[in-house]
Amino acid sequence: MAAHTAFKVGGPADLWVRPRGDCFPGFTAALLFEARSLGIPLFILGGGANLVVSDAGIRGIVLDTSGWTGCTGDGPVLRFRAGTAVDDAVEAAAERGLGGLEFLAGMPGAIGGAVWMNARCYGRQVSDALLRTEIVEHSPLDGSLNRVWVPCKSEDFGYKRSPFQKRSPLILAAEFGLEKRAVPEIRREMAEHRRDREEKGHYRYPSAGSVFKNSREFGKPTGKIIDELGLRGYSVGGAQVAPWHGNIIINTGNATAADIRELMEQAAEKVRDATGFVLEPEIIFAGEWDLSNT
Ligand SMILES: Cc1cc2nc3c(=O)[nH]c(=O)nc-3n(C[C@H](O)[C@H](O)[C@H](O)COP(=O)(O)OP(=O)(O)OC[C@H]3O[C@@H](n4cnc5c(N)ncnc54)[C@H](O)[C@@H]3O)c2cc1C
Image (cartoon, rainbow, N blue to C red; front, top):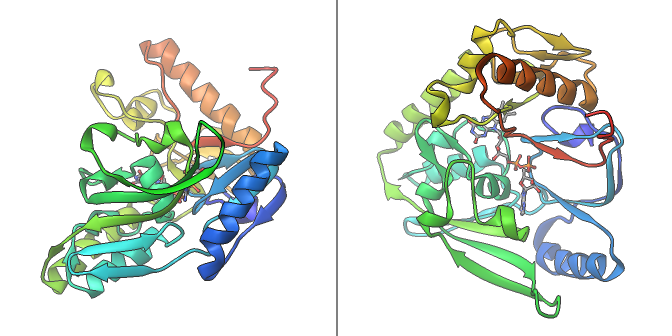
């Protein structure tokens, strides 16, 4: 899985499946149905930009959505297939002179993952522009598969929270309500965000962006708390707290997933001891973990 995650760590999946093109909905419906009938776990992979996959890898099936891409549009409403890279979606909107997604320019990951995470940056979050999401999920009554559009209700979304985190459906597509905007203005804003990310070192090393969530209760960004404890540059094996940002952990080249997890646990413990604050991971741990020592 190291080849499929931004952190570049993670052992093998038992079965990695990437259906491509128009067969995706039919093929995945059959796959979801059979996996459930046979009791085989199935993990849904977007762009792999928010994951730490264990060194032991993932048991069961990994359904990689990156072969299900594309954009269709009807006036100011654009629909993206879930595997579309976020940056490609932002470009598609810009080409059509539609504003509303500029804040996501340069953010790694795919549309399905961005909706699932309710990704946010520069004061905006995905649910601000989301109109509805197409999902496939098993009926709790008889396990049959339902394919439905779920309208976006703002009360269902919050800071790094979407309703899909509880339901675990397969997100197939998302529709966004955008606004006509002059293309040069859209492009200027996109370029600003991309430049800012470059300056903040987002692409210097493999990572998964911010590792811990922020919280109003802390009174300051989590990264600042970690900085103030002098943890920038602190490392475990090949995993290091970025020397330029306390809330980013980087893979300096030969990190294992276990190094990353251990470093996160040590950082969280030091923060708890010094401040009493309990840090909540933003990144997702996937696969088989031996937690007997934690
Ligand atoms: C350099 C860098 C910068 C980043 N900056 C930001 C930032 O500014 N703001 C921010 O919010 N995040 C940021 N991130 C984290 C990441 O880009 C986002 O969280 C992104 O939305 C994750 O999307 P993904 O497609 O990669 O999801 P993945 O990491 O593949 O998956 C995340 C979760 O979503 C689920 N999922 C993915 N696709 C689907 C689907 N189609 N159906 C159902 N479930 C699905 C997965 O099962 C998993 O639980 C950054 C990451 C990096 C590496």
